[in-house]
Length: 234
Ligand code: SF4
Image 1 (tube, rainbow, N blue to C red):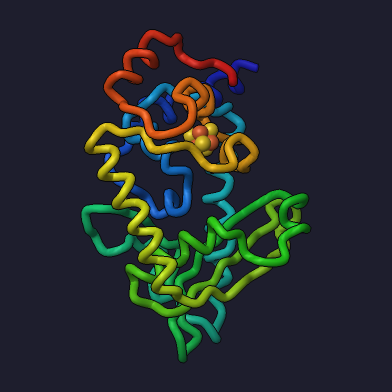
Image 2: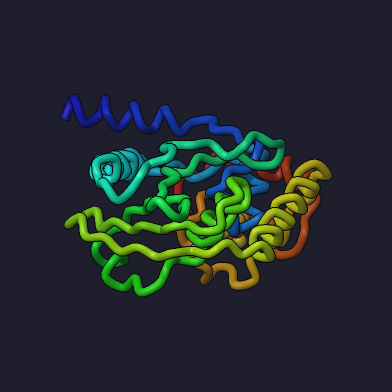
C-alpha cells in the first residue's frame, strides 16, 4: 500500500505543468482546439497513475521488439530512436529506420490491448498521419506500422507509402493552429463533438464545453478559465 502510493505520486508529479512550446509528430491529425489548450497550459483533467504507467509499458514493448530486429540477418537497423531533422514547427522521434538491403523503412511501433488489436484490419488513420510526417522529414518513401498486442505479444504490420499531399496538408493544419496560438484565437471544436473518439479521452473536455462552439477569443475566455476551479472530473 505504502509502495503503491509512492509509485503513483512519482507518475502524477511527472505529468504536472507539462507546458508545450512546439508541436510533436504525435500531434498530427489531432483536435486543433485541444492543441491550442495544451500550448496555453490550460488546466486539464489529470490522468490516473495507472494510465501513465501504461505509457512506460509501451516504451518497454518497443525495446522488446527492437531486440530481435537487431539480430535478424535479413534486416539492418540503420538507426533507432532517431529524431527528425531539427526545425521550428515540430519535433519527433521515430522508433527506427530499418533496411532490408534494398529499401529503407521508417518503423513506428504501437501497442494496444487485445480488444482493439483483434478488430484491427487496417492501420489507424491517426497512426498513418504520424508516419506520413516521419516519411516527409526523413525523405524516405516507405514506412511500417507495427502493432503489438500487449496482452499476448501478437503482431500485425502494415506498409505505409509516402503521400506528399497528406503530409503537406497535416503540416498546413499545424501552421494554421500556430497562427491561432500566436493570435490568441481558440479554434473551433471538432465538427462531430462530442462523439469523436478524441473527445471521449480529452483532458480539456470541461474547458471545451465552457468555450462552446466556434472560434473564441482567448484573452476574454482565459479569465473564465482562471475563475473556474481546477477540473477534477468531467
Ligand atoms: S473535447 Fe473534443 S473538440 Fe473539445 S478540445 Fe477535446 S477533443 Fe477537441
